[in-house]
Every structure is written in C-alpha cells, then in structure tokens.
Image 1 (cartoon, rainbow, N blue to C red):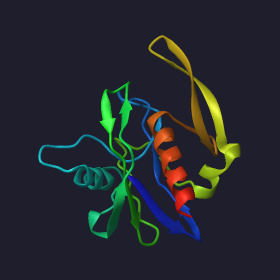
Image 2: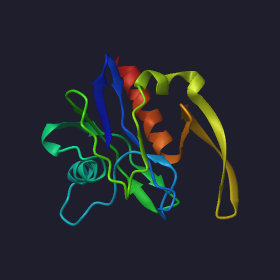
Image 3: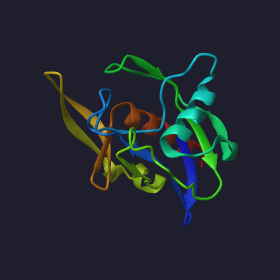
Image 4: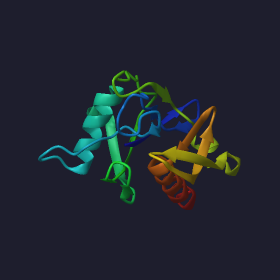
Length: 159
C-alpha cells in the first residue's frame, strides 16, 4: 500500500524497514503489504496488511487506485500496489515482527534527481547492480523502487 499523508505541507509515504531475520526481503525497505487471503480483493488485502503492519484502520483510508503489477523474482510474487490517502498524520503502531523501522520520506525528496543512484547487491551467490532511491541513510531498491518511480512519474504528469 502506497499511503499518502500530509505533514507540515509535505506529502509523505510510510515505508517499512523489514527486520533482517525475515526470510523474504529481510533488511529491505518496502511498502506495507503481503499475500492476498482467500476471498479478498487486492484492495482488501492492502488495507488488512496496512492495519497489521502499521496499525492504520481501514475506515479512514481512501483508495485512489492501483499501479502496474510488478513481478518480484526473489519471492515469486506478482505485486499489485494500491495507492491511497488518509487525512492528517496517521498514528503509526508498527508491528515489531514485520517492521524494524518506519521511515516517512517526503515526495519531494524521493522525486529529487539527486536521490537516484545505483547499488551493488549480492544475493545467493549472485552479484548485480540495481537502481535505487536514496533517502537519509536508506537505499530503496528492487520492487519498491520500481513502484515509487512509477508513482512519481504519474504524480508529475498529473501536476
């Protein structure tokens, strides 16, 4: 779930740093989200995961739409990101099993061309270079980076 909220005149997005001990994507920056359970829509799953991971109740969240699905090779998931907004600054209650840290970068800092970079990743004996977005001391790469890049492009075209 790509959740937008305004704080002191700046649009922000909550991102989670996953605990390093998690099997899938441990230590990586991600949006709140997870598997769709039987009978759920993409939006229902996104709202449930937002509540489970960050404690944000669905009642105050307005779904704006979806971004393009992104296939994640490492976990063999097809991720369909939802975009939503909430009034005010949410009262975040991160779940420690799923969230090691919460970061809330402003869209302006994520859209800054100077934040774009490359990172060398080593996973399971493979070494590759991937595009990333840097924020503070964090490097946002992989599917999260691709989803953010699409959202920022759509937001820029809509402005």
